[in-house]
Image 1 (cartoon, helix red, strand yellow):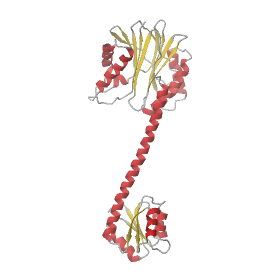
Image 2 (cartoon, one colour):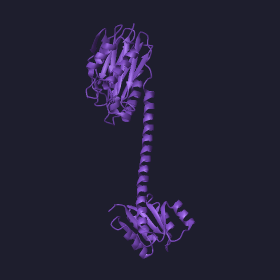
Image 3 (cartoon, one colour):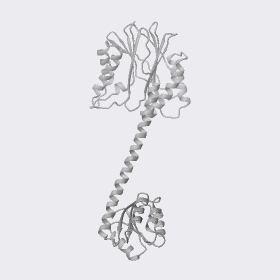
Image 4 (cartoon, helix red, strand yellow):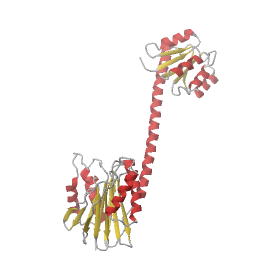
Length: 382
């Protein structure tokens, strides 16, 4: 027996019994002899899928009754039975009461049964289309929200690194999803001839990570003007994040301050992969570690000095580089990254970082990036 319940309404007992027999052993049937009784049944039974009503009834006509069912059962299949062909009444029923079919008495049970089954098929298709439209609207709204998040991120992240005399800087940034949790920023103070570079990676993915990164970036920009050391910057940022910590997110950050006059670079690290120093054909990791920001209070950060000589390149990268997977599940890892840097170290700086990313994507093949990829390179040229 089908789960769809049919409500039949007719003031003539013989007709009501005939209607009930039509659907016996096929559908559950509820019966009423007038419109008011039928409306009470509808209020008590929300699973009614089909309503079959006679037009001529004493307390209210079939059209009046069906019109009263619209708010109670908006998706029900409605069929009206009439003993005469009053065109105006039928048109009113079809236009104002969402009537699926009308049938002229005397009606044939097999025809009525076929009409009900076709009506249920049409109802199922209509409900599926409605769900599809609702899902389409939801996805369009989500796409718009993602676009807003992308716009926020584009506004926050600098389009190009600052142009500084004697140094070349480049960045390559790619998100694994529509919006990313990686971030980077630069600040050049021409009066002090100093360049600050920050690269970060927010825990989590997509919009929550991007919004958390947006909050962090705003706090970071406010600190740039205070000329704090990299370690002091991380300590201040950690304290600020902990003061308003209401999520489980945290952020790994590497911060450096470069004196453009003498090449002295001070680094502090809060949970990011170690930077790389490329000098001639040698590539070494700058082993400076630290705790991610936003996890615990009162963290102190160490600093390390690296003196950049002419021709040296300092590379900062997020862990999306080494964590990239190929279709076989192998990781790109730091060894492949070092080999790629060694192979392309002589290239112009913007080509260099772009080629590093292309090497990662070639390794990944058809596999999607598991994490955001950010590569920042600073090279001293004179």
